[in-house]
Length: 242
Image 1 (cartoon, helix red, strand yellow):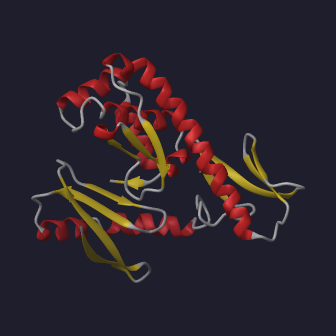
Image 2: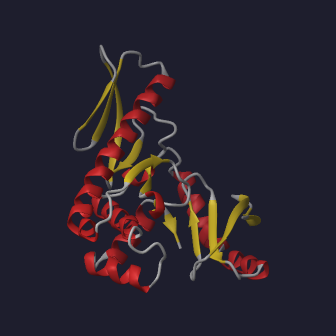
């Protein structure tokens, strides 16, 4: 993993681009709402090509960061404020703090209600939200894993995988077939259910085909013919990627 510095202009200045060389065929450039920039390239790509590629995409990177700065309070799970907006299951939701005799969370069509004993205790409120978010993610992911496992994977005599929820910067999910374990990004809960289902089936497919080979994609296409559209929606609506 290498870091490249890229000058975007007088407004956004210089950014660090984290470059990962992997066993992949295509190039993937992503800008996150945290203003972090990641580039994944095939292992054999020389640094000169990487520098040239980044130079060609300065405007695109600059535009994404500028857009995120204009909505810096939006979609930030690490600093929950009353009235702020986040994505939840593909919907734009408002955070609303309310006084209560106990701490709990409720969700309606457009609002995530944080009922708290002490509305001035920001640390407690953040912990309450984090706990609810991760529990919600586990519930949603587990339901989809159970469903696709029963319908698609079980007949191949493969054990149902254990799922782990954690924060990940560059992956929506990862699979360790030898341990029958799938890790999901807790931020995936921002996406709508169709996109979550794509990630679930993608990772379950790795239990049969560990590598991204022709057999892997044929299997994925048979069981989810529109997976490319779902992936595109995920990459454009939850994180801007190129």
